[in-house]
Length: 100
Image (tube, rainbow, N blue to C red):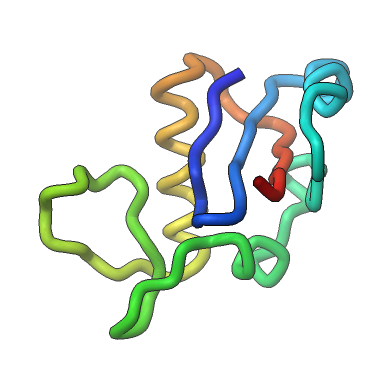
């Protein structure tokens, strides 16, 4: 199960189907959000994303050593999903956010 560290406290997991999400949830300690991706709204995920000082959210696809670009909350969340897609090899239909 691959994940993306959204912030110091939260990790994002993606699953291709409902059954996969339910079986994966058994191994996660503190699940704060588990939903179909189509049902997720921006205000639900905004609190889990890493906020940067001058205003904006982190671009998760950007390498660590590059200067930071600031994203809106929805673009930041999409960049985290794209990073998971690159590591998992399948599209996310269901997501789980775990408090670490």
